[in-house]
Length: 175
Image 1 (cartoon, one colour):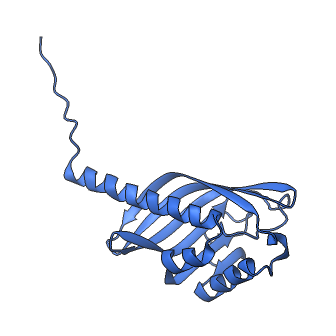
Image 2: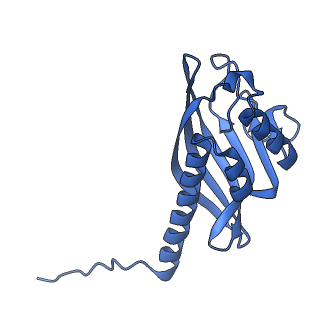
């Protein structure tokens, strides 16, 4: 009787990939927590690059199209303005602030370019407030700039799976 040995030790590359995936996942989970806790200034200051681009294409557009009109297309200045309006009570539908709960799943590293990492993940954001509950289901496509042992978001594309936002009527939170 022979016994086949199974090599259970991951290679150095597999270990490094697993560690990177774990670091990226932990980064995304922390980001979700900051957004759910409405710590938007902290999120902006600690987790985004100075050249951030935050995009949410229209729900009737599939794939990326440079000519398609989107729901959100913010650079750093516009995103900072959006945050201040939300936190200062200027957005009527977020006064008082909604309660949100994000589920981040299927985190996948698409490419490691050394200076930045391309990441995909699925997301569901539940929003509760003003006697309503809404859910936003979609996919993240992120470009994370490598910063030491952590990251900063340089590009955040949120592609919603909804055919329309008719039932929601608005998109007043940061996805």
